[in-house]
Image (cartoon, rainbow, N blue to C red; front, side, top):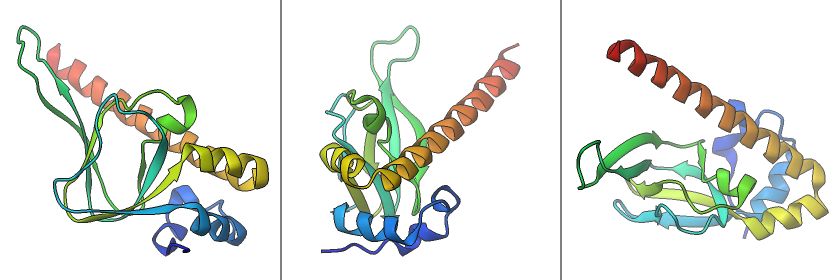
Length: 158
């Protein structure tokens, strides 16, 4: 059953998508509904695809042990809302998840399994390329954000 992708159509990362892309994706994406507090995935789970946030909030975090301590605590990386995507590194490298993803509110996600993306690359290469471009832009944006955060940390530590 097709899913409603209207929330994404006007968002900046998706401006290169064409109407045929949206039609194809609406048939391939799987809807996932989560209640507040439910995990989407945990760090080190298999990277089997990526997610788009239709509605709600998703908390991305890691469990880290601060220097000199053995007990771990949560390191919040970001909170994502409608229009954002996550888990995209799995699409690129197929490695296990690098963080936890948790529904911070009742949330609706769209999931693109890795196998569906591979099929998309064979059957609809233009759509697959636009997804790949969107993932690259998203990854670059997140790297720039991390660089700014490191610069702030370095400033405060000197």
